Every structure is written in C-alpha cells, then in structure tokens.
Length: 350
Image (cartoon, rainbow, N blue to C red; front, side, top):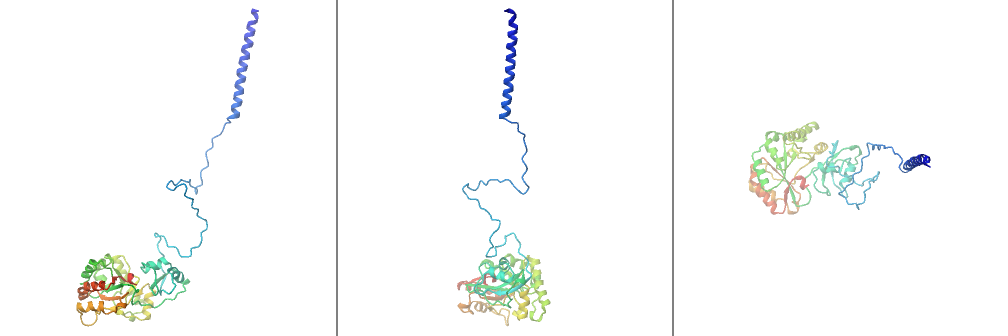
C-alpha cells in the first residue's frame, strides 16, 4: 500500500501538466482565429491635383451645394472684364452716332471692339442714347461692319446740363482766379489746352487736373489744321498729348478742338482715326474775337443768347487767358444756375 503512493502522485502531476499545456494550446488557437495579425500599411498620398476638402463652417449645412457644370451656356451679352484685367490696346478708331435700337454690346460687336473699352474710352457714366457721338477703339477692325463717320460735335444731350469749355490762349494769368471760382462752387469743366501752353504753365496744368477738370487736345502750337498734311496733324496731336502726360500723367483723349474752329472733312477723318472726337461749340462767347468785350457783354452773351429750349446740352466756348472772362465768370455761373442748368464737363453733357 505504501509503495503505490509515489506512483499515484507521479501520475497525478503528469495529468495536471498535460492538461494545462492542452488548455494553453486551445486558447492560442482560438486567439489566432478571432484576432488575426494585421500589417500596418501607410495610405497612398493624394495626387498633387487633389486637395483634401475642408468644410466651410460659415455656410449652414442645409445650403445646397452649387454644382458648376463643365460646359456653360454662351452669354448673350459680352460679360464685363474683371476689374484687374487691363483693357486691350486699340488698333484703330472710328466715330459713330448711336442709332435707334443700338446697345453698347451691339455696337461693340459690330465694330470689333468691347463694351468696356468703348465705355472707358468715352468716359461714359450712363447709358448711351440716340445720336450720342462715340469714338470707338477697335481691337479687331477686320470684323467691323461699321463705317467711320466724319463727326463734329456741336452740342450734347437734351437735358439741363451745359458744358463750359475754356480754350488756352496766349495768356495764362487769369487761369488761377478762374480755378478758384470753380473750386468755390465745386464745378468741374473741360479745358482745351495747347502743348505750348502746358510747357509754359506746368503748375497751372497740374492744378487743372488735380482739381478734377477734364483736359482736351487743342494741338501743340495752335495751327490751322487745314494747312497741315497728315503727318503734321499727328505731330501736333501727339506732342500735346506727350506734354500733358509728362506733367500730369494723364492723356487728353478722347476730345479734340481744332484751333480757330477750322476744319474740313479731311481734318475730321485724320483726327478721328487717331482716337479723337472733334468738338466744336454751340455758342462762342466772342471773348477772343474783335474788340475787347466787357464783363456785362460776356454775361449776357453766354446766358441770354440761346433760347430756353436750346440751352440743354449746349457747349459754351470761352478762353482761360482772358481777364474779362475771369471777371464775368461768377455771374455767368450764377445766372446759368438760376436757369436750372448744371454747368459741367463735356463727358457729363454729351
């Protein structure tokens, strides 16, 4: 009996060890089935043209997504150029008067231009109207179906605005006083300066532009353009423009007034082809014609000569070098205001 106990103990220990080992093997087999070993793989990078989407928290989640189609419908009108896009340089110019049914987009398409270019060049601040004169810069003249017209502008639109235009004379002494009078009334007008006047009076020229007045081209040396060939006319126009730009950084286009008011069809066509709308006048003050005029004469001439139904859109001519005109100017402005007329620039009156 005593000799059998070691055997029983040995058998019991063997059973326990074998059972424990078997249980461990069973657990390992179950674990490998439930939790397989995985290999960590880094995600492939996005293509360089694809960016992760960042939600826009400023937009409510209920806002529907705007889908931009890959092909868009053709616009029926020329869209405006972005404000940071420079307008193309024109190759040629033509003059044109607006006809019944015209739109700026239609005129641009028919003339090989752009609506924005026409608007910018003509300083348009409102819609075009019937018979409005335009100088059209063409960027594709080969596609144009419009013919240039030898226009000379003598009045503006039929609305209660008058364009006061002062031409540069030989003298400049009264100009500062005229600018003071205009500034006191916050009135902007159009000056037609010669290149020679600009060269002699750079400070006055700077002030004219700084005060917000328009400057038109009145040639360089004030010759009769009818006696010049085409090259002579171009030299007069370009030299004045360059002198104005050198002093003020601005150009005189699109307005040109022929010296002495002298012109023929050839002059008009050359001037227009080079980007200028020829400007005449409705009424001359006569301050530079014949004997010297009194201030009373000039006031009466510029405020009472035209019949009431002819005052709207009138273009008045006087000279910034005439001392009597400077003396009469406050009374002229007051009388026109009393008639319900706005004294302004060509761009506003045309």
